Amino acid sequence: MHYYQFNIGDYQSHTAHLSEIEDLAYRRLLDWYYLHESPIPDDIPEIARQIRMRTHTESISIVLQEFFELTKKGWSSVRANREIAKTGEKSAKASASAKARWNKDFDANALQTQSESNATQDTRHITQDIKHNTQKKEKATVVACPPDVDQQIWDDWKQLRKAKKAPVTETVVKSARKEAVKANMAFCDFLSVWCARGSQGLQADWLKPDERNLTKTGQRNANVLSGLTRGLLGGQSNVKLLGN
Image (cartoon, rainbow, N blue to C red; front, side, top):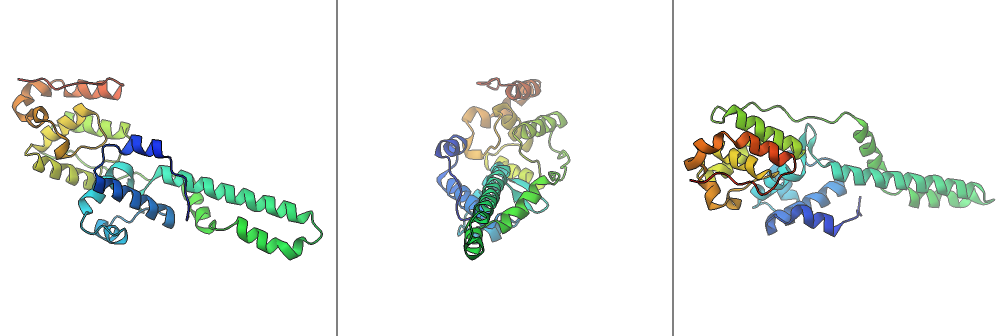
């Protein structure tokens, strides 16, 4: 596709938390996706080279994990697939309409080739993607609870990711663990804060001082984390961890 609709309000409502580099990475990844009409390869250094952001692989990884879903064929976007399918349907209808119109004319044979060519432009790859969308949705590989994470917190975090329609993959876990190290927090505590926030993603530089100190209040908070997560998933807001 060389054209796709862009809803500014919808985009800003979902990306207001991104940094400038992450926002640029997301826009370029979307352009790549629509241009190629296929999942983004699961090779971050290579895709960084293709979108001209070689020195920003970490930002690209964060964006992929938050807005795309990792499948066997690469990083897929449900929203982009839907838009590509719509374009294919419109092009197919235009082609059918052109055929019907020219069949009524006496000189249809002379002009039909040119009309169909204009109406069916860019549909070859779109048709392949429409077939793709009818197949059963591929699921990411199941990741076991790490030994340094409490099983209840792990289950709560997976439930949160499921509610946000985000995958739990080895790549996601590795990235989360890196953010925990940056925040100087135990991985289990980092996931606890994530659950309490109820957000799809979490980075070290988003954390507040009281959240970074979760380790100090961890014993008292451990008993309420499960309830906090369930409350967040049920629509509650403004939930805070217990303090000293």
